Amino acid sequence: MSLYPEKLRIDGVVCSLAFFCPVDGTYLAVFDRKDASLEDIEAIHWEAPTITGEGELPAGHSYEVADITYANSDQCYHVTLRDKGQRLGDVTAYQAEIARLEAALAEKT
Image (cartoon, rainbow, N blue to C red; front, side, top):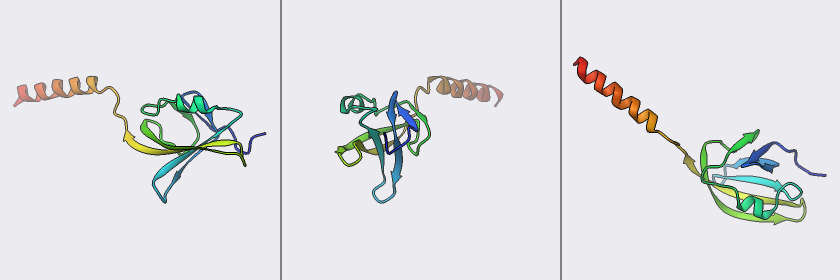
């Protein structure tokens, strides 16, 4: 039985809990050993993870793994993450729209 509820998934891996640590500005993600192995956690694409469900870990951001520890007391992996900022994704269509609007404005003036 888990001490934590299943609240979110990161790249399909069940993450029991994720919260912001205001003291050092990092996030802590807790993975129950029954739901995730160390290999599963290390395989997460932290540069662009797909985050679904409830938790304080912002979707659309890139992360850097600062530390992974295992706590035998709760049989969970504790992953400390540094937020590297929001990902912009593919902005090609947006750039093309800006160029089209600028050209239209130039024609009018």
